[in-house]
Image (cartoon, rainbow, N blue to C red; front, top):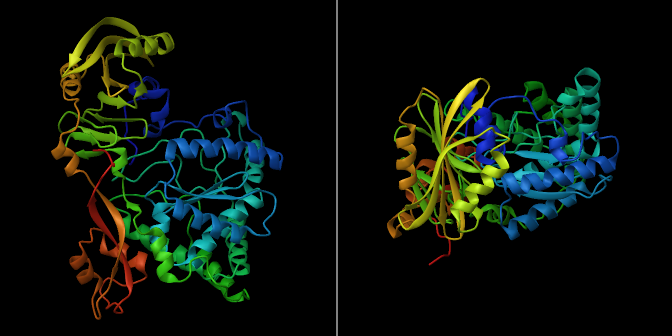
Length: 507
């Protein structure tokens, strides 16, 4: 999801009120200091042990705030492939995971934590391509490029403004989702940019690592070219964070990777997957785009199948589905209504008092009135409050709602003197909170990658029409190394994206 631009008067208070800052990815501002990366003072990467410590802490954030794809079969495959490429790299114990992001992406943390996104796995069409991408990231870690880059920054900039370190990240300044899908905020680590020499080293040595493991080093050039064309296809209607953001693509880089592949002597060895069809089978079933498990918007109503609730936000407001909250922003940007992630419990009044005791003084919240209430059959507690920040006076209405052993907090914030009807909008939004109906549950769909065999002489368009494909044909062509109009060899397996009902396994 692209960043929601919020007026400065609201940015700080929103980030704090909702969840202690977790929505900062929806705003702009300077990066946190390194103490936020590891939680205990500035992190200077002087030794390999420093890399391990910082990487371990950041890996926990990736798991918690971005999420990993829960597919044991795929996890085993990526681990096997990655460790085969990393043989001889030394220095660290390398771990490989699939991060739950739709954009084609790969990044690494200091100390050996390396990630591929599900979007990258869906776009890649060979183990050679994956092997070269993994090799590139392993080189960044093994060569301790983050430490070298940090040293440059420390000698040329205010050390208090040093970014946290994420090696080879392809997300852009702050980690986010594409415009069409939920954003997961990732606060502490910021992207570390690399010098041209570091990128050249990672490309070339990564190719050589892949070749030593028995994979075609030309996979680097082919995948870089594919990503470049993918950017051209998607740019204009959704600017996706991708491998290009901190690994900038140039004609020189692509040509160098292609030329380097021709200079490397290598011998094909059996792949981790038995054959190409087996390789495709590893990614079949992956979610394409936003996962329904994070909830979906149908018009202005938000449905969450796993948590079994529905809530309607004001019509024609801009909706936002973030990792820690879901909500909407008024067209004027002066009013925002967000539902935060729930806490365990069944007493909304106790939850309200705990929040006010913790955040009231810190945020200078002045409670105007508060009361017990009912929303449908659910117990609830409402607080009207005022606060000041940055010279602006803010009005707020906070409603705690108990639902299935969880308590949700609905927060409405408005600039004083503007958005005067926000209280009514907030009340209507709160009243709309209820369990899902059976019809709503049945209406929740998500796209998944499926494999279809082409008929002799069939075009990609014809195959898509026959199989119910919903993916852009240009992207589909890239993911399958095909052309949009050419005929496909009969019997060939082709990746498509198909919409399917989402089932939680609950009765």
